[in-house]
Amino acid sequence: MPKQWRAGPSAVRRERLTEALPAEELFARVDKLAPVIAASADESERLRRLAPAAVETLSHAGLFRLWVPRSLGGAEVDAATLVRIVEAISRIDGAAGWCVTIASNSSLPAGYLPSAAARHIYGDDPLLVTGGTWPPLGQAVAVNGGYRVTGRWPFASGCHHTRWLEAGCRIIEDGTPRLEANGSPVVRILYLPASSCEILDTWDTSGLRGTGSHDFTAQDVFVPTDHTVSFHEPPVEKGPLYAFPIIVLSWTSIAAVSLGIARHALDILTKVSQSKVAMRSQQALSQGSVVQIDLGRAEGLLRSGRALLHQTIDEAWQIVTAGKQLAVGDRAMLSLAATHATSSAIEAVDLACRAAGSASLYTNSKLERCQRDVRAAGTHIAVAYPNYELVGQALLGFNMRMTTLMRADERYDY
Image (tube, rainbow, N blue to C red; front, top):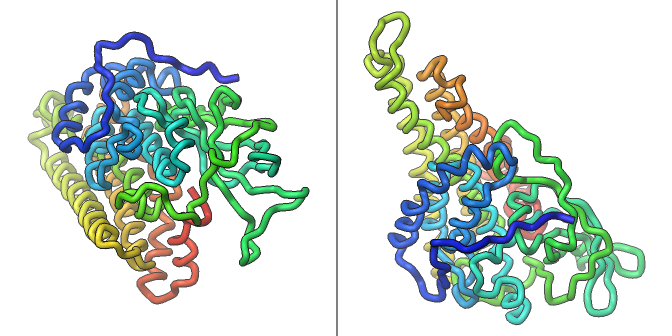
């Protein structure tokens, strides 16, 4: 059984976010916690999970509950605000930013849960964090009052500090998969108490080591019917956040992590270039044209990728808040924006490492971690390079394959 982390006393006041908070207040909380997050980064890297001090400070500040409904004590911030907060945290530590992103994404199904179950799972305690994996890699056998769940799921970021693990499953009834009207298997996301699951020590990676994205397993765990959701069904919550296609929304926050990591890399390069002396010229790196060119290119890449992401989010948000649905083309543009922001961030970090020269090899510079982390973030299916092909197909009118991807909220391809 996993050893679940529990927070002890904290100097940080627990916050109940039942009313909308100005974005400035949330950013002020990030600024206030920045020293703790930064000081915990090396420990997170060593533990291969988010350090307890970082978990405690982020939890008590409500930053794991940014997409939990306000009716349940969450912040329910809009998409653009979430992306900016994740950027800010990832600028301090990529692993912390990733865990905030995954906790936020994992909170979105709260808007689909029946009210009583949502209160039971999410309550109003900032330490109640959800995580897990949505692809239907498990089986949920229908029984009286619910399901018996068995399976194994990878990439459960933050699993050591979650109270509930979401697990995508195919529904089995009378020994065979239950089918939709179109013949495809019925799939649901089921909430499992983390204490009923076993965490497998699988997350031994080069990048984002501090996220603790291990596999977890469940064996014949009972889950009540009302502790499950399907994105085929309408959301219970009425806010625009939950009217947004849930998988499409999650792509934007994944991209935000890479943007924050890249900004951190450029911060480091700017500082290093002032103090490191180039062997050939015996001048500070900042005096060299190569460093100046690479820094300028990296800044342009990062700003353009970020601008496209925020512009596309704003356009999509206006559509949804007007009560309309995002068309395939709108979803394609969100995929493009998230993928392009990530690709631009990766290239910016590579330029920063090249410009810093041998300084980028040393762990005390933190540049090498930025490079490892941003490349790890870029492997996520939501922002991976092959998405450019699918967007291109949509632009050329080859919509069959693109439509399949853009309806990923119905396939749980996450």
